[in-house]
Image (cartoon, rainbow, N blue to C red; front, side, top):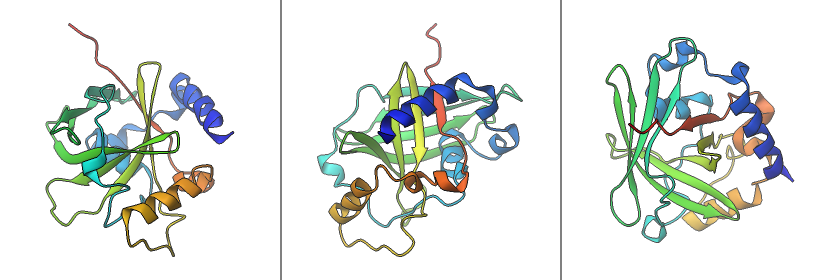
Length: 192
């Protein structure tokens, strides 16, 4: 099953230094922006995967997550702040004081959980999507790639979600056949 393979890949990513992201990618972007940039062609949609009013907060997701650049030692963090009963304000911070802000809410498709993200600074911004897993105290993010969506169009959130559901086992959903970047793995900062 592909999802079991993904878990094995995740364990490999967490254990392997060779899958770390080079520091030159961290310089211009905060953590969440970086994740959106990891994939050369993130899928952008004019609609989310579901109606935000039906979203439920994931208590395990809330709070601060961080990732360290192994070359520079610089920390980058993402904080998911519950905004209301359905959505988060996701603030992506780096040590250089760059802050990016996103509206974020969750959608469950089958057994998979997704974040719907939209830049708060741009009212006309498209939606991007990250598959996420909470695994052994780590947050693992996979960006949905545009490879499968080139000729597809969707009139409703339901049509888009159905298309994603039909392709959950297809590695092209995440651009995997195209040698795209690794999943982004974040951890909780230590408690004082």
